[in-house]
Amino acid sequence: MDAILKPTILIADDAEINRDVLNNMLHLHFNIIEAKDGAEAINILTKYGNKISLVLLDIIMPNLDGYGVLAQMKAANWLDNIPVVIISSESDRMAVAHAYELGAADYIARPFDSVLVLQRVVKTINYYRQQRQLVQVVANELYAHERNDLVLLRVLMHAVEVRNGEDAIHLARVGMITELLLKQLVRYSGDYKISSDEINIIKAASALHDIGKLGISEHILKKNERLTPDEEEQLKQHTTIGADILRSIPDYRDEPLIVAAEQICRWHHEKWDGSGYPDGLKNELIPIAAQVVSMADTYDVMVSRRMNKKIFTHDETMHMIIDGECGVFNPDLLSCFRMIADKLPEKLKTADAVSIEAKDVMRRVMIQALHKF
Image 1 (cartoon, helix red, strand yellow):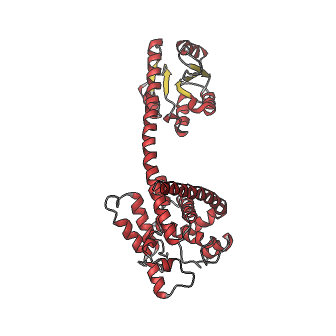
Image 2: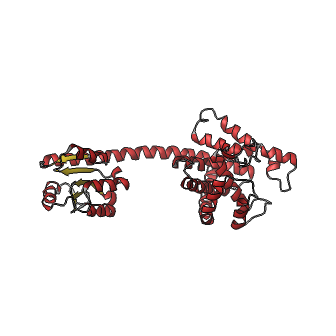
């Protein structure tokens, strides 16, 4: 068999004679790398990563024993892809149980014969290979599903953009700021239990915060002059209209994305002191998703060119938001906002570039679609 095509096994054992015995058993079928102790084994794993198909690991070794190697592999998430088979003369039940607790895939006690070792090694490698293939199949299915969801989300974003004159870049920037704020909030305070999946959901849902403007008169949305009091009241209704649109979706109203988007639509104009609209909620009664998107939207509106609105610098905007000139925000969010302030200008340049590319793709797709008719 070509050496390049052979799986690679790492043998970690402090006894050279043990390494030689295992090497002689396996070298015809596998590439062999040897480590004389646990510390060297970790260095080899760090260097080669997933190029190693399996580790044959002794328990009793100097510098770092087999348990220490397993613990470090587990902490580095290597055990998800690199199985470990313990080969040791240690036969104590507690020792064996501890190895399995740390993530060992199999345990072979000395003395052993070559046929047994080869069978167990091949079986373990094949099992992990099949598991990786299954995970990849599932991942591909999830990717295809998420891609379809993303396409639909892009269509809705485009509808809002066309109707409202609102740049898709703004929606992407709001999503970027939302993500930064939520991650910082989780690090900053243990009071907010928000998982990575929930952060991704809220970020995606933020793009729909103004979907209710689809139900507002175009005259009001694109009016350059100051709105009359009656027009301002009509514009405020976009919060409840958006929530109603999402709540009326029959089959998906309980989906996490729709739930988050409905909260954001209805309450992203509420204020911490209860002075916002439409329901005058205050403090923790305002869902955290709506609070974060409100701050993100406020910041980007102020620093971006939008119709007849004045543009403020990053520093001016930061001072105005922190000083309460844009309404009262959650004190925890204000603290987090200060912490991410230096990252915002550079991060938003990235969002701009991605949005321009996505917008260009959308334009080309629409042109191609029109040419078919």
